[in-house]
Length: 152
Image 1 (cartoon, rainbow, N blue to C red):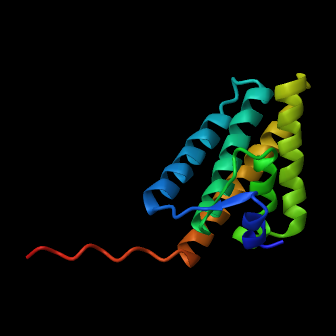
Image 2 (image 1 turned 90 degrees about the horizontal axis):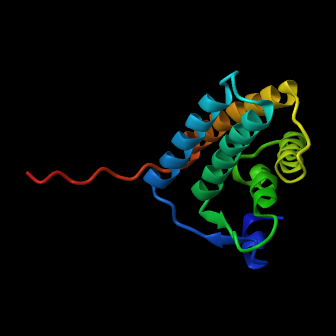
């Protein structure tokens, strides 16, 4: 399914993000991932922070493609993750890995299921990898605005 099709069925909305909006999300993802590496935090907290970084990176990719999720629709996090093959060309197998971390976070947050140190670390590693890929994709595919003309 294309991004346009997802928009037609109400899962996405057209959105013209400016460079600052995207940069803020990417910077926030960096901060969350830095915090996710604090060993003194519980694995549950580290997975929450890593997942936040993952989602912010995936959302920045979607915004860079001219869309945002319809947050009034259930499952908007899932849509953002599952759209990564369309937004940055991610392989479907990687999406399944990211989906597993989304589900682990849900189990932790809503059912109190503990997260292991290994899962917290792997989630943070995958989120860092995604963030780097999104930055690289944006650099290669998103046109930079022309500088403002000088007033001489």
